[in-house]
Length: 253
Ligand SMILES: NC(=O)c1ccc[n+]([C@@H]2O[C@H](COP(=O)([O-])OP(=O)(O)OC[C@H]3O[C@@H](n4cnc5c(N)ncnc54)[C@H](OP(=O)(O)O)[C@@H]3O)[C@@H](O)[C@H]2O)c1
Image 1 (cartoon, protein in one colour):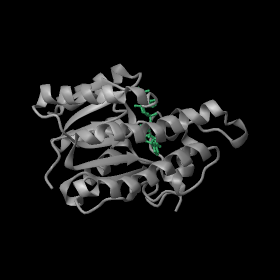
Image 2 (cartoon, rainbow, N blue to C red):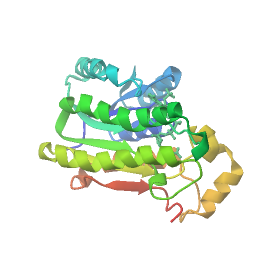
Image 3 (cartoon, rainbow, N blue to C red):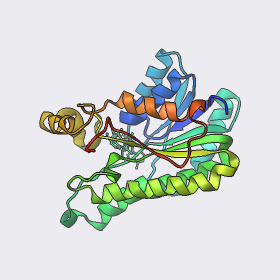
């Protein structure tokens, strides 16, 4: 297994998607990234990668719109061929996700469907659409959450949607293993991004609470998640598949 040549990172316009795209680019991997509404953020990620000596481009994709995925796959492979001379994808990072943190009595069918539709259904059907274009020996990383292991108020639907992603990860590792494709989940702990209204970044009380309940004594940075994902797709991890790797500094053990 060699170093990947290219990668697709969904939700690469900010947060963990941006840090993952940059970490991959730092390893010499060319990066396609997607955004839904954050076109300027996506352009900023591309600019950062180019300034750091890498290559990247951005495409729009709504993970809640599974009907668009075949067309997206054609657009992506066309861009890969035009820009970099091959149309096979080596790495798929399913990072885009949404967190709607509602208590049991507040969850509406609409919000339930949005959560499950993006985090689980969208991840499943995007993998289905892109697997025919994934190189043998490729890698899929699905971004889950530490909340599938520990609990926090109002996270039942979110955590369940990500637990489904973890189950999917193991099943697909079995299905895609004969092609040498490794499928793993990375489960970030609380990380300082816009997620959950930016609470893990901007709420000092929450940060202090989380830091006090984390073995390494602080909240994680986006760069620490991106570096872990980049390490997971590297050849040194070639015998690792069907795993859930928690990257949380030992949160809420
Ligand atoms: N931050 C944390 O503490 C934490 C912890 C555990 C797991 N995670 C997971 O890590 C992933 C990234 O989170 P983050 O912290 O970077 O959050 P974030 O800053 O809120 O970014 C979310 C990303 O997902 C994209 N996205 C959301 N809904 C989408 C849709 N329907 N279609 C396409 N893209 C969509 C957003 O795109 P637009 O901006 O264009 O809308 C954005 O790029 C998520 O899967 C999240 O569940 C985060």
